[in-house]
Image (tube, rainbow, N blue to C red; front, top):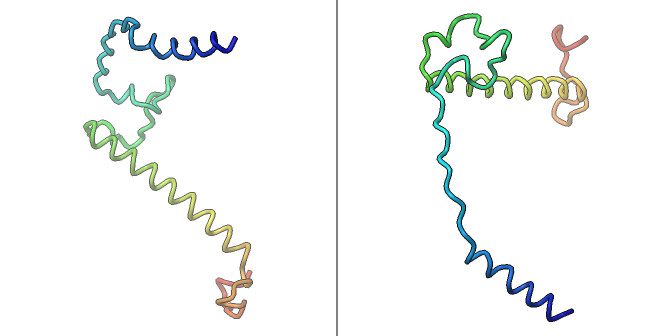
Amino acid sequence: MKIAATLALFATPAAAFFAKAPAKVAAPAAPAFSVDTIPGALEPTGLFDPLGFAAKADEATLKRYREAELTHGRVAMLATVGFLVGEAVESKTFIFNGEITGPAITH
């Protein structure tokens, strides 16, 4: 049994060198850039662009707009978390010690 297992171990990797290579299939051509086919454009409404920025933008500009939108969204999410954490630890920090008062600070 050990001999059969050993032969199987040595024969399996050798088969990889002698097997026929599969025929290469040509990759499908990338579709031409269109505002209606970019990711995020949904079927019933298409691309949501109420101010018409996409109508005047080429492919590189539209990708830059989308990247900026994602970046601004992530910064806004972090700012929201920072605001909530700041409200949770109000007057409990070692820097201010709850000694700062004012009309905008007291609730």
